[in-house]
Length: 275
Image (cartoon, rainbow, N blue to C red):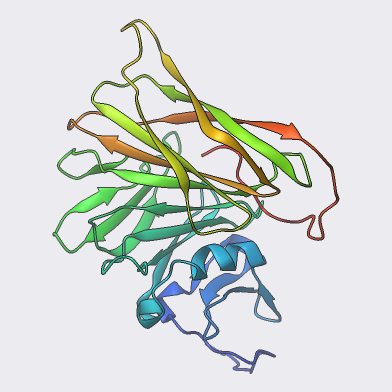
């Protein structure tokens, strides 16, 4: 077998070797020594969007960054980086980046230390499964929210910085969220504005619904007074109080009072409107 080795035009190196993962025909993505994520096709280096980097660097523990690992879910076309957060001693954070669309989101599984991740499909007729191993000797299925003993995993989702189709400053008054009705579950919703790391106005809601015949539960989240901002991030924390209880978020619809529509400097800012 013949092979050749060449030096790529890149001033940094790979900080976390286990973060290097091939992403279909796009090449590979990895965490570099400047703690940014890069994609390479073997000829050039492309840094991932700045809002992806900020979402990671705001919360990632720098000292443990060399030990980050990643896995790729080819069905959902996402690169998933496992990292340790500043507020945790565990590798309980996952940054998921869709390398086709540029959308991304961040997940946190408090109290778990993940070691490695893997995605697979049992058959072509079934959806892919995201599995991670943990230091408690269990295997967890992430998107389904269970461990291999069938116990639901408490977690939260951040819906990334978003202008929701309304550029410029505006007043955020709240959001309507639709969940699948589920007993023995609660969600806590909070909001951050204009790239602040502080989430405000947390509110707890039950998802048991008014009737057992209801399929969905509609939550009307509101803030005490309108928040004047351009960028909005919603956080949904999910709590399960039974081994079979499960939280499923279907839709988010924010509410605004629009005051201006100033074009933004970065029209390619990635966002995820549904989590």
